[in-house]
Length: 170
Image 1 (cartoon, rainbow, N blue to C red):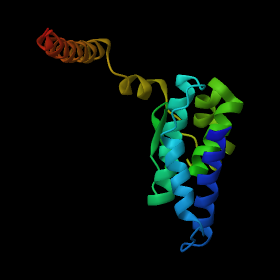
Image 2: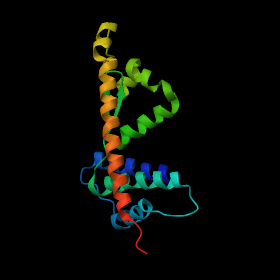
Image 3: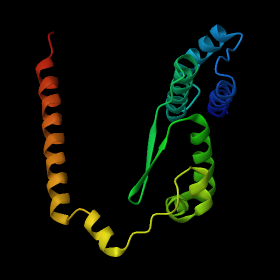
Image 4: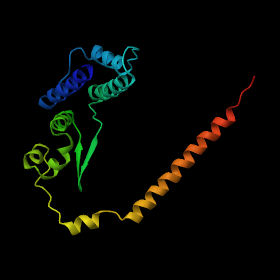
């Protein structure tokens, strides 16, 4: 409930600023103080996941209120990308995601209404040959995964070495 209220607050402030560029909320200091408190909330009676999500959302809302900034998100579907760069677009995307579920990717590619809502233009039609050339080969994918595995192993071993050096001094 708090998360939805925070996102709605950011959405309303963004809409108000869109209509009136010099819009200023009267009691901005108490609002930012309350958002800071919610961004660092540490109540023990809430689940850890819920607290983490609430803090994350309210940090974004606080940044939107103070700096008029929005954390840009990228959604990839097929060969295309959609950039979510405002609260209105995020709220619209989240609503469609809730309604369509796993079919959202397909609808973003083919559904003209959804493409019009998100201003994506006409659907991109690709033939099988083009899709095949865009796809990376199994060997390239293997090379990428093995390099990532090696880097992850090195990073872990460095952390383990640091833990071993701590020792006990009793």
